[in-house]
Image (cartoon, rainbow, N blue to C red; front, side, top):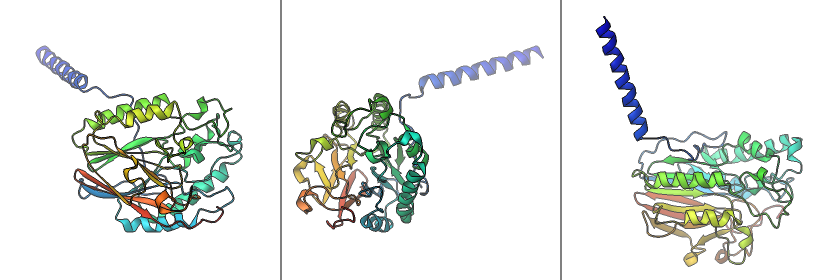
Length: 349
């Protein structure tokens, strides 16, 4: 009897040691991004029929010109077109609502912001596709383009949309969403709208680097896409529209490190209400192709034309047209096709 007890004890001890060795050899990676989930009211992400061949849509900046205006007609047109693109899901780069409450910390406008989010969801939900959305400045800031030190706008976004940032995988690709107005509660609320140009916290930046490193080392991930609101590179002469220092240069340094992240393929932003590409060899082109891995920085695109008042000249050669992107993954190759919906002036603009 004692021998059996001794044998059982030794077996449990060896098993425990084996588990310990296994966990010690494969430690849990800390500092990585949380899982990004589709916005409330849209379907869950499915499984691709072919992991190396699929399509998705990218866009953003559909918000109305004021808190008294309806969602723009062109946004409703885009929502109706999405399902016909053959896309498996949508990634959206923010400014989905007008937002910018005057006194968010008083909670007196929650019903107003709730209705704005519900209207956005009801329109884009017509596509019957999973939609992943990161916040823009209109979701995060107070009226006057200044940070909300109370954190109430962040709370509303998480309550009615979902996580502020994170990542998910689909087929042979990974998708990272950033919040370019992150942790504004920790920023001095005094800066004027002209002096504040976004923020990516140290925690989010560390998570971005850690997640990129893990994904770049994963042999099953052929492509990495990053989507965000404020762009790294703005159009010429409009540097104030880019993510400002100190966050901008720090994020730029991470995202341009192609030696470390050779399968970081495209970075898609919004904020400027137009289309633009950097490097600007074909800044206002109609399509862009990349093969990964590559010995080059990712292609940076601004697709901020989903209905917000157009910026600059309403001409195709300046990017001044309503737009969204159809992105096709085919093995090691990615092709982005720009959908030009014209330069029709939206109501209220």
